[in-house]
Image (cartoon, rainbow, N blue to C red; front, side, top):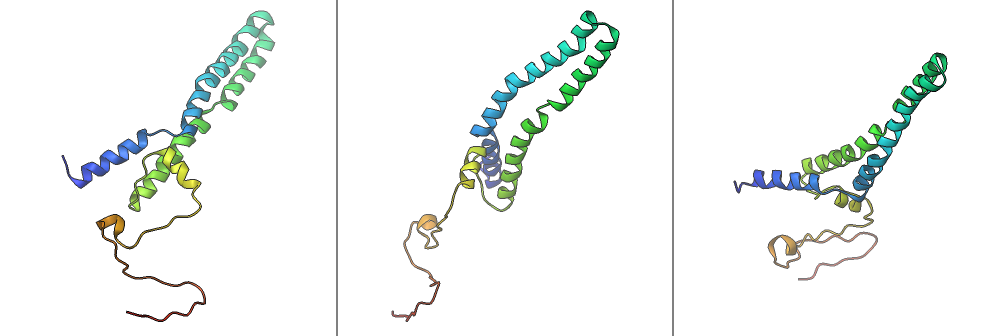
Amino acid sequence: DDSAVSKLIQLVEESQCNRSDVETMMDTFASWYTPIVLGLAICLCTIPWIVFGKEIGRQCTEMGLVLVVMACPCALIISTPITYVAGLTVLAQNGILVKGGAHLESLGRVGTIAFDKTGTLTRGEFQVIDFQLIGNHSYTKTE
């Protein structure tokens, strides 16, 4: 389908697939951090029972479960893509399409934006339609 809506949907889907450096870094971090934390928690929950007995085993099991809850990277890992999707959605609702989180991050570093209101970009024709002076400048209109 070549309708404007289908093209818009395709652009939004492409923008969500375009991953930023931060998202890639978070995925890499989670790929080694999570197994290490789970491995430590499993060791804490099992080895003390065998080596030190029932009482210390219970205490270490409690510490192992606390470790899993406290060290869970879910909030950190989930927050990055949710932030990007929220930003892309708000921009799309306002008629601005950004092709993914990497470009959204780039917009965050922009200091100045200049808009061409002459029609050069949209119609390919150069024509000054209107202009405004800002400040205390004197202006006389000549034709």
